[in-house]
Image (cartoon, rainbow, N blue to C red; front, top):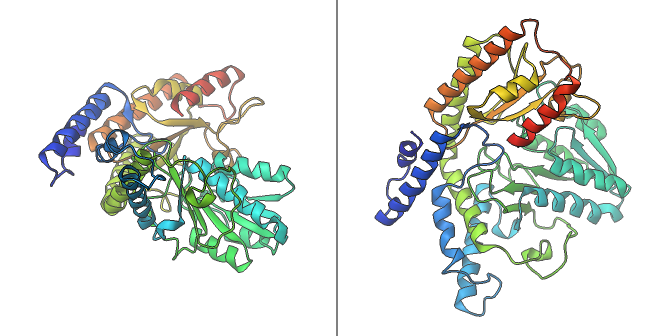
Length: 438
C-alpha cells in the first residue's frame, strides 16, 4: 500500500531516479508491512527517498569542504550549502543569510535562548518569559539562565493548551529580554498565537523566539509577517536527515555564541558545515513547502476519520488540547476507564508515543497533560497519534480497530475503571514503555 502511495507523487522523474525511488519505496513498504503501523511522525520521520537521492553525491563524488573555496571541490560544496540555505529560508520568507545551520532544533533553541539573553543582560534585560508546556530543549536552557541570575517566568496554559494573552501582558516589562513560545506543541499539537505574542513582546522592547520544530513546513510561517526574531527548526521532523537543523536569526539580533572556533555560520555556530545533511535539509524543506497545502488537507481528513471511528465505537474518548487550533496530523487522546500500563503494553500493532497523566514520587510522565489538567480530571492513559506523509487510509482503519479492541478488552477486565494515580508497581513498567516509544 505504501509503495503505491509513493508512486503517485513521482511523475516526471527520469528513469534512473524512478529506479532509485522505487527501490527505496519498496524497502519502506516492506518494513511498514512487517512492523507495527507507524503513527509517531512527531517523534521523527523517515527520510524521503527524494531527500536521500539529493544527499548521496555529497558523501562521495562531491566531498569537498564547503569552506575551502579555493578549488572546485570546495566551491561546489559551498554552492550546495548555500542553495540549501536558500531553500530553508524560502519556507519562512527569510533572507538566506539569516539562516544558521545547527545540529538540530535543540542546539538552535540553546543558541537562541542563551545567546540572546546573555547578550542583552548588560542592557538591564534580566527576565525571560516562556510557557510551562515548552519542549525540554527550551525549559532546560531557561533553568541554566536562572542559575546565572535571570528571572524566568513560565506562563500557564488554558485547558485547551493555549496561553491566555492576558497572562503574557501582565508579565511583560522593560526588563524582559526574550519571550520564547513554541509554534506547535510537540505532545498535544496545539498552535500558539505566535504573531500576537511577537507583537506584544516587541511593544515592550523584548525579542521573540519560537521553537518551530513541529510547525516548520507543516503550517504557514512568515518571519516578516509574524515579526519573529529567532526561529528553531529540525530536519528529521520534515523527512530530512537527523543531525541537522537551523536557526533563523533576524538581521541585527544580538547573539553571543555558545561555541568558539572558526568563522563559519557568521561566527555564531563555528565548525565545518555538513554538506550532505544541509543538502538533505534544504531538499526536505523545499518538498515540504511545495506539498504543504494538499498534504495538510490529506492529513486532516485522515485524522478526522480516525477520531470519528474511535468516537463512534468507543465511549469516553477525550481529545487533549484544542481540536481546531491544532497540527493537522496530531491526535492526543485519553480513554476513560483505562490504566496507563496495560494500554501501553497491549497496543502492539501501532507505533505511537505514549505517556500518562499520572504521577508518583519517582515519576512525572507528562507535564504537558498535567498543565492542561491541573485538577487531575483526565483519565491516566494518554497516547499521541501523529500521522505523516506515508500514512495511508488503510493504516488508519487498522489502527482504529486495534485501539478499539484493546480499550474494550481492558474495560471488560476492569469494569470499575482505571485509577487516576499510578500504582507503585506500574511505574517501572510505564517508564520502560515510554522509553521504548520515544
